[in-house]
Image 1 (cartoon, helix red, strand yellow):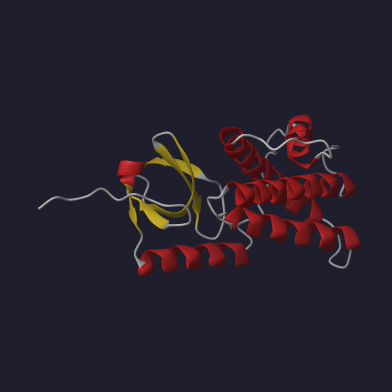
Image 2: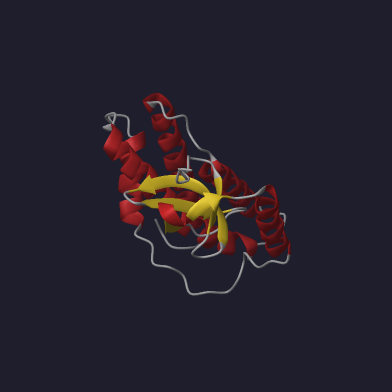
Length: 192
């Protein structure tokens, strides 16, 4: 009997047996698979041979755990801010959103998508922390938290493998980066 190795696909929910963590497949980088925790969080890279398809129970357990942590406020903790290169973030978004932006080659497009995803992972906690310091009915707080929710939804999306869908996905991510940079400025955080 021949055993075939599990081959993950974008959007699959998998178990990283080396780290004992459940995550969603978000991308592929050489021999590594980029995973995002179910329910959101900091992505990590895992070797393909350490992955297997998650059972329904494992996926559900990971989702419930993430929801419980968020409801307890674990997502918003006091921590040292990560340094942000706002100039690079702006340059990345302009490569996709500028009026004179050219359609990137497929390999460059994947790099831009990964850059935008990384920028969002740095921006979301910063903007959230700044927004939650404001009164609940403050317009800037409401707009920022709405923008964060939209950015998180966009991070969860797995685009169709066709080039036009990937370009549209990259542009949506870039729009979220641009919006969160503006919200951060409006909230008195780091000046873009």
